[in-house]
Length: 346
Image 1 (cartoon, rainbow, N blue to C red):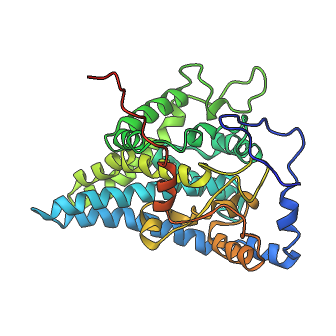
Image 2 (image 1 turned 120 degrees about the vertical axis):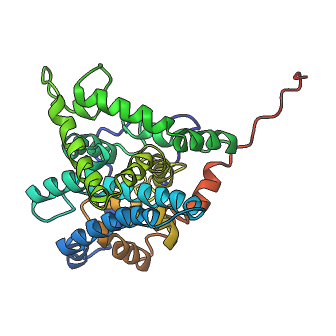
Image 3 (image 1 turned 120 degrees about the horizontal axis):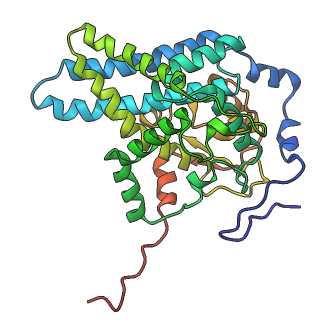
């Protein structure tokens, strides 16, 4: 029986039993094929880190070597590049939360935190249980990420306002202030820090949770400072408040906005076929292959394109949610008509 979407504005509850819709596609993969796409290659992950950090410091160097009118071009370019790589570090943390970044679990968490999560004020440990709920309850009322994609589609004017809040730093300031409150244990708001705690158990909060953020950022500051250009660190900070927030928003829209029925694993999550420039600014570390990630969440990021090709060759993507490019995703996301002007207005 074909799955049907819930009525408009009605989000289904998560089923009591695990959804078995993945059995269809999984049965098309041999044991050897599954083994191939699940195989670790730690050198590839280390290359991912090297590339991401090289882009960050390369962008700083580009601005540092520029002068005069060239700065009008290089500063915005650097902010876009750094914001995209900050998303890349968030993806490193995300992959570490799935134990899929490095084959050794201890090093997976250490590297995922110190070279991925902490510099952008995140943490693998509390993110892991929070994010696994998202995977188990995708698209249902119990999905903790549902609010990120529920409002879509929306009007272009509404989306422009969201973009303005991101690029003006309003979103970043609100989120970083909230994260600081979370890490210090101030306030009673439900957050990643208290997700999945046993009754009476207190979340791990305090200055020791904030210290790694400042320590890793001190290292980022030290590198341009060692070349006599400490002000270049501001590119990292400004990007963290602005372009990074926009990249997160577009990523979230691309992954789950305007998706199909929650119970359909091939339509409740989107893969976006990204161009080279979209991968550079918006889709680092193959994060655009999100459908594949949800189908088998421990596949290392560098194997996701291979898994996509295998799914396509087996004819499993014919009715799946696959969109060509983020421009098309955003076109659909902003397809809601503008409200008619008030006829009574003067």
